[in-house]
Length: 403
Image 1 (cartoon, rainbow, N blue to C red):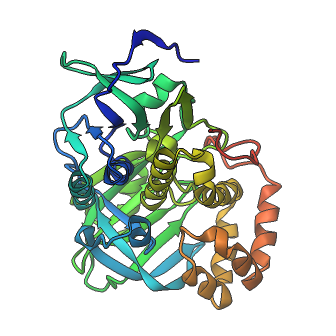
Image 2 (image 1 turned 30 degrees about the horizontal axis):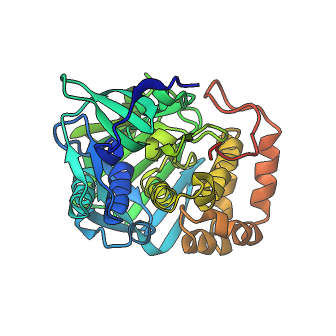
């Protein structure tokens, strides 16, 4: 339990909502609740929102989850995904191309929307404490400025969320992601994304994502800290790529049963985005799912409904990805090779028609297209996870705890 501060919040708090973190999900929450007429402040520790470049590949669910066209942040589109394993490959054609989004464009776009809705954005604001107080929360910012008093608190401050720690949330496991920008060879199709499964190096995968007809990013989701640059540089050399620059991040892994919502009287505190680990653990993709969770948080706050209830659709999706990850952590290269062999035909059509953010809706179609995939997964589940990757020993069939 977090102790309640003895000092009473003033009758009129400084803001209705304080959002800690100018992340994509934090800016989205700020935009939605500010549009509803609330007084909102976003506190971002960096001097510039969107100062770090990083290429994301997302599905076409991005625009629907935002409710507007994010085209200004889209630098490229790819319509085919080629999956490699055990010396062979198969293609999945996407009726609606994946979007290649540049982080340095996406965050300023979200900031502009939040400010247009009336939210106040404060940069160079490193939060040092968030303390429950009578009637709300007190937020302290580095630099000797007066504490900020707010009614509701949103933690959108990433994988190492200070808000989550202050509220007593369990830390999330996280994995490092590193990618290198490279020149796209002249004989490589810029409409083609590549994914390689090599279980001896990573329980996840390598990728090549074209950013344009001239450049691409080649990346790796590593098993743990200290296992990123070496395996990536080896792979780059094997494939004949020369790195131009590197990009990296720590990505949280979704954990069922982790608490992400608190009530303090009529005041509420919620976690969103990476702070809530709203990340698909199969692909460690978190932009669309983080925005989806941000919409749920905004609805819960504005309508005074249960955050857990608003998250049901996202929970269903993330929960299925959790189960898939639990099985994939037991796959061998030979298993991935059999999966590649199963793709051509009806399975390729099913995978292409339902993107990575709508697997829950497509699960029965995918399984009916290739029932052998379920048998392959069932056999894998009889094995122990490969190595010490931090994979769960038992799969908890439950959702996040919240109000």
